[in-house]
Image 1 (cartoon, rainbow, N blue to C red):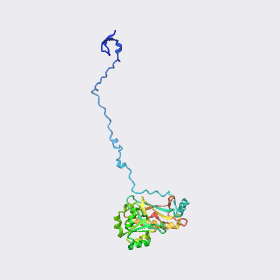
Image 2 (cartoon, rainbow, N blue to C red):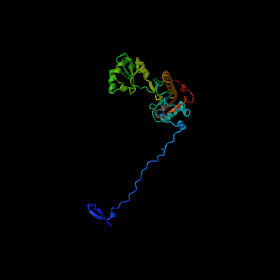
Image 3 (spheres, one colour):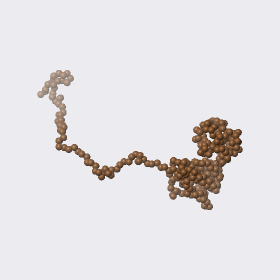
Amino acid sequence: MAAPRYCPSCLSLAFVPLTLFRTAPRRPALLLLPPPQNQQPIQLRAASTNALKYRRKDPAAASRRKKARSTYLAPDLKNVVQFSLVDAMRYLRASEVGRPPTSSKYELHVRLRTAKNGAVVRNRLRLPHPVKTDLRICVIAPSDSPQGLAATAAGAAIVGEEEVFQAIRDETMKFDRCLCHTDSLPALTKANLGRMLGPKGLMPSVKTNTVVKDVAAAVREMAGASEYRERMGVVRMAIGQLGFTAEEVRRNIRAFVENVKRDMQGISDQTAKEMHEVVLSSTNGPGLSLNGTFGSADAELGDWSAAKA
């Protein structure tokens, strides 16, 4: 039998079958009962004293960070193949085949055992057989003064003060070394050329012995002299041309090694240094470790392995 229902569209009373308004049966509501009064809360098991004692503790970040080395790395020479001077020169000449004898040069690298933060070896040396003799030397001194005339007679290519300063600013003058007379040092400081000469290593200073009183003697000494400086624990210097004989290279090596020893003794009170290895290389060749012997004649080059600061 149909029951009276309101029409959904007109809200008027009408007889609509009950089957049209049947819905899904309702589910019974869940009753949330309180927990029993006698139930105890769950407790975690406490760590034992023995476990706390041996528990691993993470170190602080500062202690986990690897400490930096305070000295330069010196490789072990037990398994290094070393050569006599004659054999090393033979291999290096083989790698320079086809090049003019004066274009390629022999270079000596002296590795030191030294601290990273400390005084460095730095000096100028005139070798028994100069490698480069065509240096253009500039002397900061009045050209008409006795010092300027003596420097010109000694072989200086450029001598002067204000005209030289202006040419350096205009970058119209090129030279390989620069000396300054002690009386001209205030004028050089006032010219403010450190930014131009400093990066090139040409700025005269007392530390590099380029501010002198006797400029003529300094020019004669510098004409065939070479400068060297320690960088990252290694002292490097050109000690011969490819056309030099083994005896000429040996004399230059001995003079260079002995001069480096004296430099290390001069700064031994500031930084302890010790020679570790001597390596000979060429412009386009590899570096070969020397064992301190000359060759078949077994002439000693110098006991650099036992040299100490």
